Image 1 (cartoon, rainbow, N blue to C red):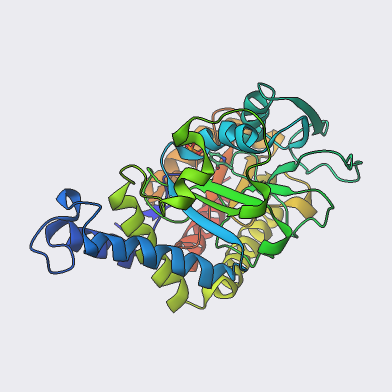
Image 2: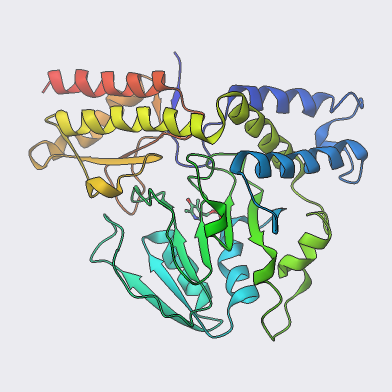
Length: 352
Ligand SMILES: *Cc1c(COP(=O)(O)O)cnc(C)c1O
């Protein structure tokens, strides 16, 4: 039976990216050596790194003055690296859930954090003041666990930093509005192990304290992400994913695809008597669709999960901190999988 992969991360990747990786693990670029055992200093891997950077720049239309880095440590290391490199006195953080909360915890070690937070995480806070002397504003554009998402780039006067772990390449972004964008690759790009950072060079070098070499962005800019051994396999797969994105209409193509999938899912959640959405409509994520069972059907939650699993649906259990269900509709997921899940929801409705 076909498995429909709705995991939140690590998550679905284009089949072509998986196939190319398997093939390179056997024989990388005609070298007769596995991608898993070739030197990152070889000219063959150097080309992969350069191509991956070039594809990032092309697909996201990254202006001059920005560097693209591939680092280790996950998005979680960025939570500390950002304030370490950029915070002199204070920064504003919009707290939209678990990941932002973790970022705030790290930032507080480096200075004052002005935290903007709503009553709950089912909508995105709006209409707050930003102090002109803040070093930066930090947002999480897509909240993987709660299923809220910014649908437009903020237009503000202080450097804007965004965790785009779970929506990079899902829609067109005006990079020039951001000072720094980062994310773990394991949601929309590659297997876990690599973290991307897009940074405008002019925001660096302004803090007075020393920064350990590996945690200093400048180190990685100067060495083209090869100061130490990069996550070779993940960078290779990321490049294959980006080639697939390009072949499928670029980020505009992805956005069209993602909007179709998300509308189909939300329409069914709103229509089906068993289910309801959890997020304010204007902030609904097109990447992670969260929903629960209506009060009177709450007892059927486990049964629905079992039924859906028996039909090939994988990974639709909601995050342990939220409960209910979450269907992650990352770029590589086909509309067929969404249609299959909707059919399962309809069938379950007709039985109750
Ligand atoms: C998954 C996720 C993270 C954590 O990424 P790691 O690479 O595991 O550190 C951070 N932010 C967001 C928005 C995420 O979805």
